[in-house]
Amino acid sequence: MSPTTAIRPPASHPTSAAPFAAGARAIVPMIVGVVPFGIAIGSASATLHSDAATTWAGSILLVAGTAQLTMMQLLGGGANGLLVLLAVAMINARFLVYSAGLADWFPTASRRRRLLLALPLVDQLYFTAATAFAERELDEDGRATFYLGAATAFVAAWVAAQTCGLLIGPRLPASIGLDTAALLALVGLLARAIHDRRALVAAVASALVAVVVLHWSAQLAVLVAIVVGATCGSRRSAR
Amino acid sequence: MNPWVILLAAAVITFLCRSLVFVGFAGRSLPPRLLAWLQLAGPAALAALVATHLAAGDASGVDLAVVLAAVCGFVAVRRTGNVIAALAVGMPVLWLAHAAGLH
Image 1 (cartoon, chains in turn yellow, orange):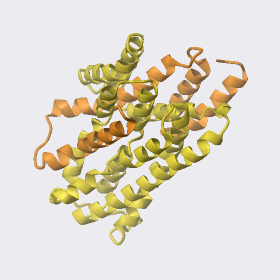
Image 2 (cartoon, rainbow over the protein chains, first blue to last red):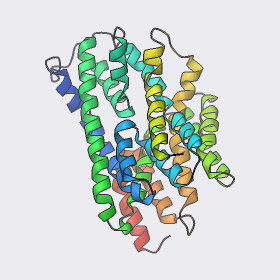
Image 3 (tube, rainbow over the protein chains, first blue to last red):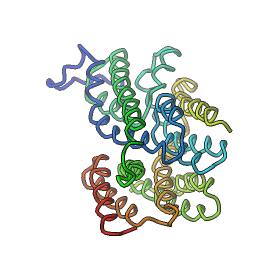
Image 4 (cartoon, rainbow over the protein chains, first blue to last red):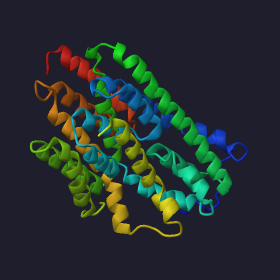
């Protein structure tokens, strides 16, 4: 269904009067899920030998946990800067897909507004907006306000979580294993990302290639694995 | 390369990924095969990151407690559909495994 199609909202969701607040409320479950990840990234800063100021700035400038964690891990392992940037580009390539979704939701937005709306685009925001716009009657301005409300709440919570991680992380005992918390957050995202056979093939192929290439080049392992994994997955049928 | 330069470059790359189709290709769309490939880059990236982290381990080699925690966390999320379950289940498993002497 096109997101621009008008649909009557359920009676229990009178969102048209305050779409900004409705957007902020709608993304709360996603925030609950991502806050531990943000705290874990902030806490991992010390163990990955990442400068705290760079980590904190990254929470604002990137608003992309997986890419940020990858960047910290690769830099901590002494990877070449260009390889780090290539890995970031590969990991964030999925935003190109979400970007196409924005074009569908905001077809008449000005260039300036498009730049503003694209700025906070993340998985959680995209999926929250996609669900809401399929269920609720909102015109394009209403959708933009709802989207910005959700984005504001999410980014604020994300930066706050990483700040907490940076502040409390170094004071926690090593035995608590907060560096493993960051890994487990990735595991959780991976488990959710495998939604069909193609994604499963992509993930399995990528993991196998990563482990094999790791023996030759730790710097290239993630990059090569993403290319091979996504290519293998795209050659399979979805079911 | 200076970490700040890398961070700023990463921010620009990330913003380009977010805005390219929306701003630069207004009224047009990417080829379906490319879109399908891009959708799979996410799970492929996550799997590669998890696999390299688990395979690299620490100075003493692969930490089996971490592997066990990751497996349990993965299963928990698949069963509940909630990402938090990876932490809620995985961390206690990690602590218990370490307490039991598994490394």
